[in-house]
Length: 178
Image 1 (cartoon, rainbow, N blue to C red):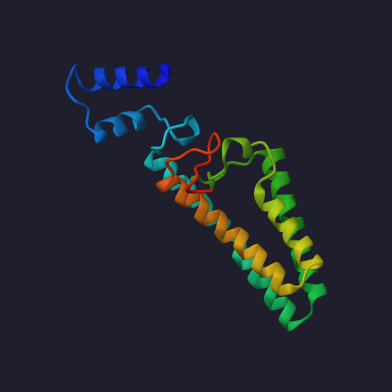
Image 2: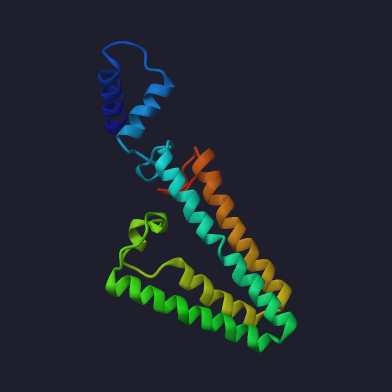
């Protein structure tokens, strides 16, 4: 619509009059405007892509929690393993409380939160709570499989959607990443 015409006109003016615009120049222009998938455009700035990859790396820190649960369960018993997960949950809740209440200055590497998460509880709290419930309610192998698929499926969907996503299903979700 009008937005596409505006962008084409802006690109034309940016590149210089009636010269044909190469795809590289158009993408560089859109990156300079900071237009990303959230705005309905496929290109994503390198900085945003790096931030999302770092964010997904932090999501991979959920794997050691599953490994710790498995070790405690195997060497001791299932009740103690769930108690350990509950202790982890309480520690994470306290960290979230400090983060939201006192707003401590965080190192740049920890700046992986999305805008909607800056003033709310992060997804790690919900994942650990779900982990406790799933391990308590289901057979060990079923729970471990479901949680592993959740972790790695989310990681793969996000990175594939960002890198190769071209067909938008929802506002910010692509068919390729779905």
